[in-house]
Amino acid sequence: MSAKRGTAVLLVVAPAMLGLADVIVIAPAAVDNSFSNFPFLICQGGPSSMRYQQVYDASAFSVINPIGGYIRLIELVPGGSDGGIALSGSIQINFSTTSKAPDNLSPVFSENVGPDDLAVFGPGPLSVSASPGGMAQITFAGHFFYNPALGNLLMDVRVEGVPPIMRDESWVAHNESGDVVSRVYAQSITALTATVVDTTGLVTWFQIYPMPRLHAEEITNSIVISWPDDYGLFDLESAGQVEAGAQWQIVTNQPIHSFATNSVALPFDLMLRPRYFRLRSKPSQATPPAQSALSAHAIRAGETKPE
View 1 (cartoon, rainbow, N blue to C red):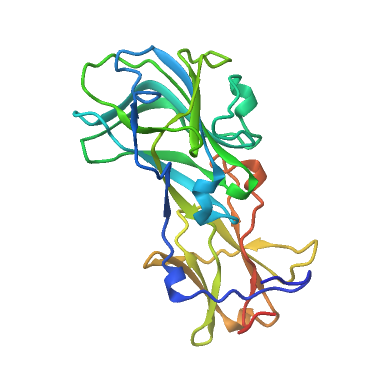
View 2 (tube, one colour):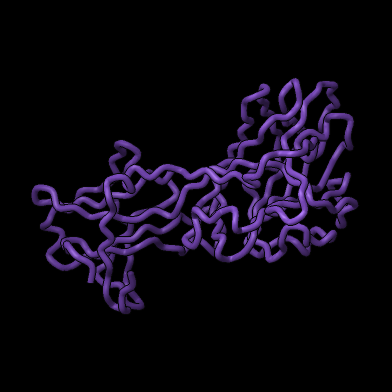
């Protein structure tokens, strides 16, 4: 559904959409056929530091294509008899959107990194573990906005300062040419060029918050604007028009949180003229500057049908 410039669209969202939760993407989704200690288990008799890049094909993220979503955390699957563990004196995890495809990463690390490169974790210590049959979760301080319509996803990890351990621990991986992952790495955090280029990749579970949609409803002399709980990622803004030069302002009413939904009730006496509403991602170090102006769908309060 589209609208001409100068108009607005009322997006009526079904009740099930209002409870919209994070989506889970597993990449690769194929049955695992390998194991790997790298990069989160270099303490298993490996190097003292590492630079590691893994690419995920955009096709694995079709559930959020073409609107995109915010990557909030990843989970890894332990493969050893003792489970899995991730320890580091210092680790940094970055994401970016790359033009490089699986099995086509450059051995030159900088050539794989996309223009929206963002550190979502660290640099700092990391300690997570999982027993066999469980999952190890790495939650990010930043939320990377990824739109698979714009390219593939690159995870870039720098890790060092890990004490050696002697246990049967590893992470589930997949090793198959032509699948949705591949990697390059070097056994030094300061390396500029990879010493290993292969088609293996960690099986990674992504928890992603999709771009939300606004919903408007009339309730007893009020207009209620609601959207799925957004983890504080967005501000609700309003304006009297949507043409170029519109003066968008943050709605200062505190949202009410209920059943995984945010809602703001505004009295009709504030709606003497049409008002338009949108969600705008908050400018912060957790959001790439290129995405800080990204707005969700705008609606005009009081309308009951699309224009």
